[in-house]
Image 1 (cartoon, one colour):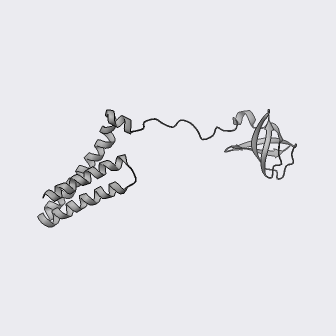
Image 2 (cartoon, rainbow, N blue to C red):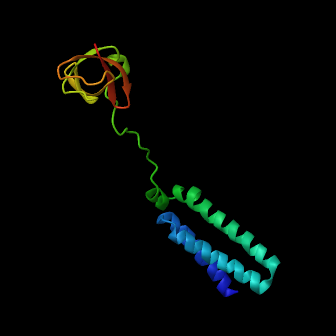
Length: 155
């Protein structure tokens, strides 16, 4: 009986440590320890006791996870462990506001074959030509924005 209780305790401890050091290994060890305890109960005390042990294992694991995910973050120790800030930035700002650039004329800074750079209001933007090859210095019209690239056509 001591071995069974020890396996349940070890299983719960490893499940608790899985939250602190994610990766799955500690969680798997904890589940295996608890399942081994359930099998030992089944073999030593019969099917009824085995089913009760399985139910107890699920309840104990649920209480452990609830405590770690709901109660622990509210403690002083837990607040240092959990990151509650959100990422508010973007990977890259859009090149331009569509309302400001759509329909405007620009100049090819490089050859667009089909991508290159254009000059608009003294700023350099990456562009894709929808008209095929465009030589440097040609006048272009902005038709749309696709991700971070201006879509242009020859004027």
